[in-house]
Image (cartoon, rainbow, N blue to C red; front, side, top):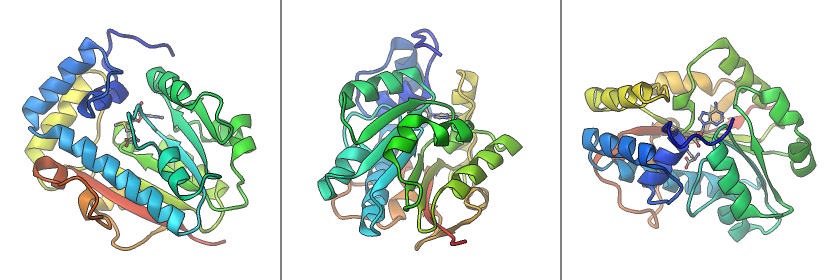
Length: 262
Ligand SMILES: C[S@@+](CC[C@H](N)C(=O)[O-])C[C@H]1O[C@@H](n2cnc3c(N)ncnc32)[C@H](O)[C@@H]1O
């Protein structure tokens, strides 16, 4: 798959919300329409990045030093390896994304960093991702790993293939591993969020909003740590986070699950 500047991409639209420069006119047009439908949508992206930061720090606090970030996107700052390295310079991070723009960007910022790798793949290709030589060289599957699926599962329909992939990641990771998820939801403002999902779907990226029970069912085999599945800003809030207002307070759900033993 190559970069197509004429087709909007979820990764580049999100980059636009975050004020990045890795986007094209088609992406900016969708981002503008999204902002018209959900005023303050950029705040959702910022609040989501704040959740990512808290989840990575939580994992580090639990002694986890390895991260597999699938749907990693095109972040301008606050990347997983930067957060992790502030805590432990030896931390290892594999970034995976289906979008070539995200992969090219990640390779640019990481260069030949020996403790990070970038893989272009689809979440559903669990076998290939887990067996990728870059992944197996970097991550020790006998020790806990934090799997990050942040703001990406809402681009994936619930199919037997998805469930099989989620099970494969679960089974490959050691007990004590963590799964961090955030996900678009329409549970608080159904009409607004349904219109947003419809816009994404009409512009080429099918988007599925889910409620807490639906998200919980994707955490099968993982025990949610406190406070469970909540609106993202309520997941272990940190005074350093940017202020949250408007749609950012209700548009996404978040949770971190711990892999059960055995
Ligand atoms: C909204 S961005 C989130 C980026 C980052 N995780 C964050 O939360 O800041 C969603 C990312 O998921 C990626 N994505 C969507 N479907 C995917 C799939 N099936 N496999 C891998 N990546 C996928 C998109 O390309 C995009 O970069």
